[in-house]
Structures are given as structure tokens and as C-alpha cells.
Length: 315
Image (cartoon, rainbow, N blue to C red; front, side, top):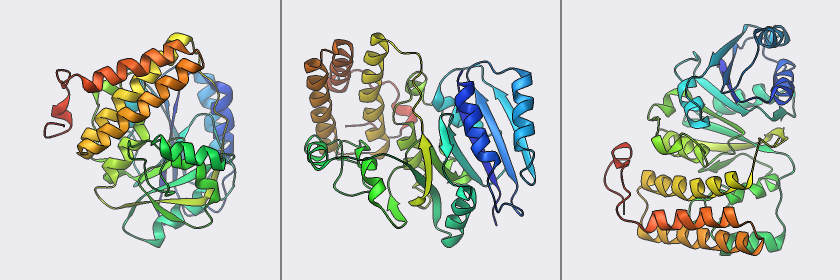
């Protein structure tokens, strides 16, 4: 049996984090499994609160809780830096607003790894995700969704995860839902502190899956369910524009990481153009402008300044 390091990246959401840790603390059938819990903090958690969390997980056999206060902000850096701070072969990432829906979640996760030595990543699903028939059709036509459960869209968007609730058996996948994913730590050996991911780390889960898939296969186990509360962080209209622009830029560099062809870059432009139009019609003008800036970024041949992180020159 494998041991597991659980990583929770958080920023000023104590109520959510407490609920997440409570759901971890009641996990069962781990008598012969060591559990390490690492809180990676981009905010400000008091020493008293950390001690409370240590007490909460003390009932788990062979458990230890670690706390890491970051000096540089950003979710991507949280995920990246955490790898050098944990000790076990399996690393399990949860968002701080995730709540495990099953007291056997961790046991089922580790059993999934044991079924096939070629598996380097196992993901679960968030309850409640769904898409209507019309929504699926629109998602496919706008390249936000693939017709296959485990495939990214032509523009490398992950809209297909809205259909994961339909699955009844473990299936191969190209991507995970970032709130609920795990990897063999060694499969993430190629992670780097990508400079374009320092603010809004949109698609960070896609990057991790792409890197890990070089060393084995990724699977989704639909029995690994969480409740993703999707608690809002402080937001503004200005943030919507920055997130939209980051969506374009981060997916552009993701295609570069995959060494994608011209067709996939064209698909990304099509998707971004649709999203820009949709936000314009909704009068979300900052978001629409963010997508517009993203399109201009992709079309500008002079902006390729990070290619040393990705290998050969991109398209």
C-alpha cells in the first residue's frame, strides 16, 4: 500500500479550509497508510488555527500536518513549491473549498493506483456538474468541449468535465479537475515556475496533467467524489478582464507545451472569439476586452519571450 501527501493551497478562506480538513480527518480504512497534510498558505493563518488543524487530523494513523507560508503569491507556485516539501510518492491536491463526499475517498484513490503500475495520475469528480443537450452541442461547436469524456477540446479547453457525472467506470483522460487531482510525485519532475502563471493560474491543472502524462497514463475514477463549494474570492469587473486575458495566454502557452499544430491555435482563436462575443452581449465589457487582448497576444509574433521554458519555438 502507498502512503499519501495531501496538498491544500489556500488564501484567506478559513471556513472553507476548515471544512475541507474536517472531511479529510474522518477518512477511514487507512490503518496501514501514512498521511501527510501540507497547507500551502498565500494568506494569513494564525498559529492557533494551525494547532486546531493538527488536533483535527490527529486521529488519522501515522498522520502529520505541515504548514508552509509562501513568500511569492500564485496558485501555480503553490502547487510547484509544495512538491519539494512533501515526502510520499502519491501527492493529492485539493482546493480549499473542496469537501470529500466519501469517507473512503483516500482508500479508493490508493486502490486505483494499485490496480495498474502504469497509472501516474488519478482524478475524481465534483458532484453536480452537468450540461444540457443544447449545452453539449454548443460546447462542441465552439471548441470548449470534446465529444469524448476524457479528451480536451480542439482548443484544449476542459469543458468535457461537465459530463463526468455520466461515467460509471474508471476511464482514461487527458486532464483532471484541478480541485480534485493526484499524481505520482516523480511524474511531475518537469514542473517549472512558469513566469506567465504568477497571477491568474488558469489551466494550471492542464499543465500538470500534460507534464505527468509523459511518464504514464491518467485516469478518472467516478467513485472519487467531492463537493466543490466554489467559494468566491474577492472579485471585481477588473478581475474578470484579467482572468479572461490569462485564459487566452495560459492556453496559448499550454498549446506550445504540447507542441500543437496550427489547427489547434486556430481553434483557440475561434473559442476566444466566441467568448468575447458572448461577454459583449452580456455587457461584461471588461471580460470581453480581456479576451480581445488575449486574441491580440496570440496574433502578435513578437511576444514569444518565454519559449525557453517550453522547448523549440512555437508556431
